[in-house]
Amino acid sequence: MLNTIILLAAIAATFALFASPLAKSRLWRATTTPLASIIGSGFLVLGPVLDKSYGSLAPLIMLALCGVAYLFGAAIRSNIARLATTAPRSPHALRLETVSAAALAGAYVVSVAYYLNLFGSFALNLTPLNTPFAAKLLTTAIYMLILITGWTKGFAALERMEQVSVGLKLAVIAGLLAGLAVAFGQGAVAGTIPRMTPEVGVWQGITLAFGLIVTVQGFETSRYLGADYDAPTRIRSMVVAQALSTLIYLAYIVLLTLTDLPRPDILSETAIIDMMAHVAWVLPLMLVAAALAAQFSAAVADTSGSGGLISDLTHGRLTVRQAYAVLVLGGLALTWTADVFQIINYASRAFALYYALQAAIAAIGSPHRLHRAGFALLCGLGMAMTLLGTPIE
Image 1 (cartoon, helix red, strand yellow):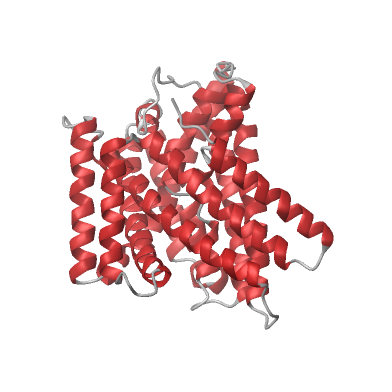
Image 2 (spheres, rainbow, N blue to C red):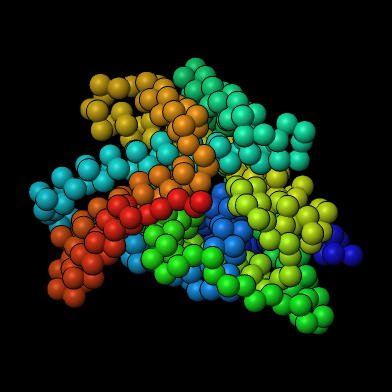
């Protein structure tokens, strides 16, 4: 019965995303890109990490992560609005834009490694080949596929997967939430709601949260949709995406924390699959399918975006194809020298630096003293995240 409920929830979400009047809304189409980026691979990793590390405080940490992401989003929204005007820009802001673009290019390199290493782990999780070495070999093979495709034909064919993968991922999340809601209800009736003590201290908890900002990253993609949407639409799309993702994340973490499930002794990037197997047999299969589609399409999108960005930053000294090769070499180095949780930390630091620079640009350009002070503090927070974020142990 529970498997049926999960599948019906996923089907209903698919209908809402593709066949309802909502799918035809211009604002919704603009929202799906940042929403899909925010609720990406981090969704699968974050639940067990927060649950095990923070115990019953996990929902508060999730709310704090989403709140900080919203504030960084406010800085980027301020920059979107300013770029849409004809007002002259400060030379300092222009220099920071160049540095910010370089930080984003570096973040792309790490994020693609993050996506593809998760791809390797999830792809082999339900097979006899489920070893770290085999996962790294598969990740390397996917890197080679992406490099050959980008070098020879471009990514147009692969990028068509993105819309389908977005719908698949959100439909699976709907099924996951439905399954957790039923399991939580059963536990509440039976009186088996767990109360878990945090495993980390205050300072360790803060620095660990700093290292998890990448799991709610993705809202900044609204800034780079200027070819398709005007500034007000992009600003609204980011607000809607962040609001919806906050609700989804909070529902997920609250239900996971309050549901009586076996907790892993040692965290792994695929721990959510083992936990959800105790809810319904269909969930691990759905999660693996969604993870593979989401990771691959996200990796293709970031590789494509980084190629043009790196080429622009080098003023054409590196062609887009050569930039793809740089990204792949960097990603392979990370794959074979770091585990997934270390890569998550590196990606969080890279994006925190980008957000700090965007907050600095917003502070320079804001005409309001209070806003300038707020953005300056936000810049300081981003720099603290860059320097102090720690990986999951």
